[in-house]
Length: 430
Image (tube, rainbow, N blue to C red):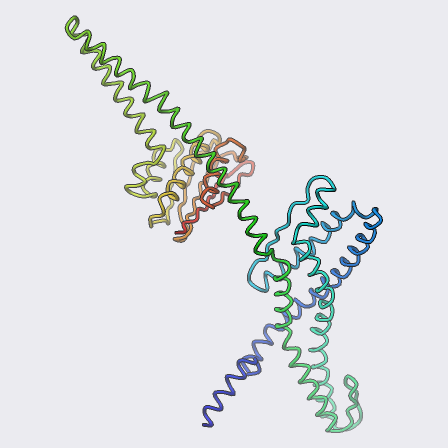
């Protein structure tokens, strides 16, 4: 029974954080928590000034003179909000993003955006609450540990002398009773000071609750993003169909028509001029072979057979071998990915190699495949002149559209003088 009671007491101490291990952990976290709350005190004071400034601008707007200043006032306080998002996100371990509607257009449009954007109302709520509690919490974060040390130190000092009179935070110590009372008060202050990490977490959670975009805003932004990428994917698909149709019409279709005409002429010449008929048949065979080669090129441009037969690594290896620029393939991707993802990655690499060949003046080219099972990463690097830009209608813009159509993204780094690095990330979710 006593053993069970001891186990229960140890459990209760762990839960309440009053066990020796809990005290040590809290002491380790105390400096960071106090620092967070101290900075929170400064931002709380700044929040109070911001609220007062906004109130003055709003009051001036009632008589008309403050209306033009409203958008600028909101823009001026957003760096403070950005700082608090970054601090809170770092403490919580989860980044807090902002989702504002753009303040563009004329004054009337900007005022309408300010009134309709829920992020501005949430920002105002945070400014008011943080302005109220930020500075008091910072004061307590500093005063409580200092008071605890003072009471314990003064009581110890009097205990070492055991005579005279000293004062400690309003307690006059002239007896052992007063000394013990000062120690008890110091322990209470110390226990309260050890709650600073909880206060810092509460302040960060408040920032996360108010400064993070609500689910409706995130969903609306996501729908808008998907609408744009879907339109881009449809445009790219339409352009691809037109290219295939043009290639078939101008190439294979014309050659096949020529084969039909040549075979017809050979049939007419077979009895009158057998030798001419044989030459015409051989010409038709050559034309048919060329038409077949063009058809294979068109099929390869739609979906390379080696990609479905042997996978992305082998397809990119063949692509690298055909590159006019010496190309090195570094692949950490050995598992098969969804067919659409592999096809997009293949054509991304093909387009990047083509761009580098035409414009970079590079001497070497490297292709890297990798990423975890749920994300395929493709990186193409050349040592050319740099200065590449993703202009509308260009190859790099096409790469970006291919990536965004699969909910991926492209990043481009191409300073003047090189190197140029094109990195594409393609999700492989089921």
